[in-house]
Image (cartoon, rainbow, N blue to C red; front, side):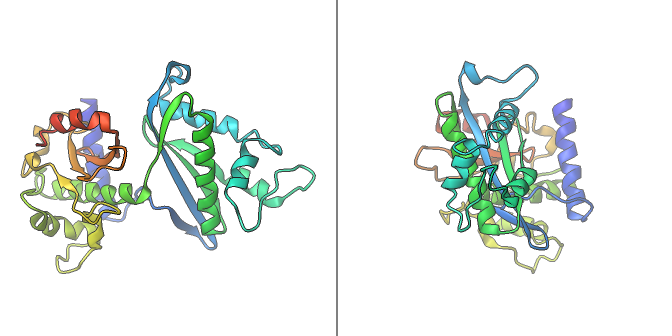
Amino acid sequence: MLRTSIYRAVVVAAILMSAGSITGYVMADTVAVQAQSFRAVAMTQVTKSDHSTAAAPGNSLAQDDVNRFNDLINDDLPGGFLDKALKSAKLNFPISVAPKDMDPRFVTLKRNLAASDRSSDVFVITLNWDNKDDAQAIVNALQQQYMSVVSGHETLVALNPVALDNLNKLELATLQFVADNNFHYPTFKDQKTLTKQLMPYLTGNRDTTQNANSDVFNQAGQGVPYGINTSLSDLTMAKVQDPADMVLFYETVADKDGNRYVGYADGDCKLIVAADWDAARKASNIP
């Protein structure tokens, strides 16, 4: 019942997004948040953790990583965690953490830097900054520094924001289509039919003659279409028993480690490691 309620809530949120009532989650590298200010994002997924870093009671693995990251950024003296990350960012104008320097940008950095859990196994580092390139360089450096620190206890993967952004758009468009069509999924028989059905939701209006960026239908960096779970074609939402475990879209070309990004029937998007793909594929009736 809880899973169904959450799933229906996602569909309602999709409707509200299409009506402009709320703002959806943006997973691009950097987005302008106000005049001369940018938000940089670095997302990390926990794919394996040993007992020494297992989640504390009531915490997910991602929340444990958020807490650990927040502890580490308090190591902010010269030679500490934050100093090492900032140096590895190779900024054109380095930020000094030395108390004697009283660098005002260091104070701003501490104030505008945040970490949060996006799901049970994905956490996000964000920074609001006045320079787009520097902002992304800083969060990427912090992400890599953190991954280095916990590498002996956890296996972490830096997520590709473009891949997740593409899948997120397709997922939201699909859920909006479902809500508009008596809770039936689109016809997934081929890419051309799916594109025609989802295009109005990707353009933000119902004008089927307007073109959205066709790249959203293709796997990031590969130029090949995303795989589609054709077993859901024209199916009603009520017939999907476990939408959180049912793969809807997926990358057909895995990365060098065999990992791939997928989008689920409940609207969630994540990375599936090579060892888990076969089970996920079979559970979703994907040949």
